[in-house]
Length: 303
Length: 239
Ligand SMILES: Nc1ncnc2c1ncn2[C@@H]1O[C@H](COP(=O)(O)OP(=O)(O)OP(=O)(O)O)[C@@H](O)[C@H]1O
Ligand SMILES: [Mg+2]
Image 1 (cartoon, rainbow over the protein chains, first blue to last red):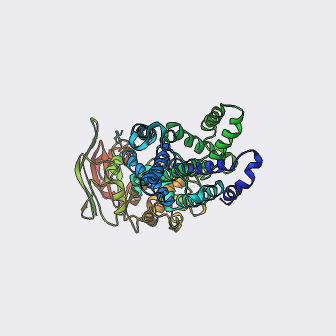
Image 2: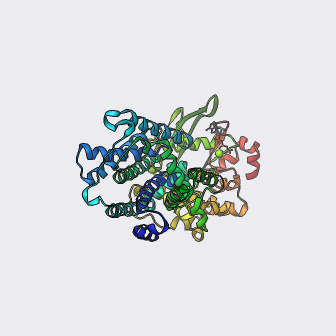
Image 3: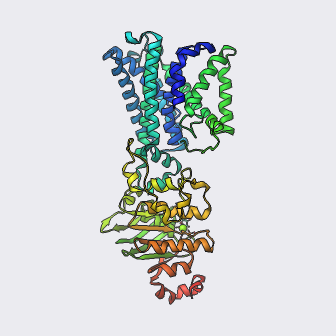
């Protein structure tokens, strides 16, 4: 964790030297938050949500709408993003928490599409395909350095809290439920409630990431909640090794964006290469990069 | 203490239990025996809330628990082990046991409290030296012991054990027998067991099931005199 914070804490100072730019750091941090929250569900809960981009998008829209219609206060808008993500997640989770496996995954896709559809069609609120433009940053965040510092602070806080969460009794029980749902019931756990909570928390974190995204990007548009976005977070998490490590999504997100910017300079088809890597990982190395880096791979038990 | 009356259960057209009544007295060890497919495990599944009976009532300490889900029954102090092992395979032996303790269960929604607890249960099932070995890396015999350990960790007042010695050799069976004899002193136990010598040595009362019905019951001495038990191969083992 210290290495991660050292890396991102000093990133603006050296990233120019390797031909990239500090804003990339912001993007990666946003996606790491999204990915870590997502992995609470996938890696710890064993619950595959393939429509998680929806909650990221809901957070982004909520940030913009709160700014336009309620009050431009930054904290209020970020709070609104989390709240909206969390509430949307809580509602969806009501309908899916008694499912598992493929049915769970299909339902999350269906719900994800509903959110996307609403974003496109509910023109009077979401401005349809164009989305919300002209989202403003507060004056004290207008230069890139302060934006970076702010995002880093939120990022660090989110990472510490999520780390705490997965190592708390709640996180341990959630992982136990993934390993053996039946036994968990028979030692007295309310499995449904744990699944529901995991989804809700994960959607809330996605909402936070979406809010930061809207702040940084100064816009929110339907594409941020597309099925493709949902796919990206799954890919990052699995490629990085979210099934065996808390840090999986971090590795996956860094690799994703570095590939986008470095490979993307040479070929339009960088995503194809990343997708190929994803397939190789799924087929041959489900423990992902984190699994390669660590000797005692504790398969399917993120630690 | 625990009483089930007139239980019926069918799966589709297949009648699996027919008018089964049993009662388990406080502080006693009750055995259930019978050939494969007799309905013993199904009986446990009804009594511990996995399935609901089609008919019949189940009472525990005077309270009707017929419609309760497994977690509610577990919280009343009833615990079970499984014939087909049901462990948290990626967790260490210690974590398997801890997850099942009431302390962790009560803290399950807490984010700030510690995940931890005592290792006493591991000691009692003879796994103290293997606390940090992952469940899936344990030997078959140790997994059997851990299966009981998880059930014990909940500190039950009533413990259901479904063929805890299945697949074990003589020595490992003896180890489990010693464990159960020890547990018997403090917990009410219901034990499904194929090994008749084992069961007749431990049980205070035994139910014999066949084709989904209780065909005989009584103390080990009474059952030795029972014609059905004598006729069946099961009988020879004990006489
Ligand atoms: N969930 C189920 N669905 C359909 N049939 C079932 C189910 N559970 C059990 N049965 C059937 O009920 C019958 C009794 O099974 P049960 O597992 O209770 O037997 P048992 O006495 O425990 O046998 P064994 O000694 O082999 O463990 C069997 O014929 C079995 O196929
Ligand atoms: Mg059985």
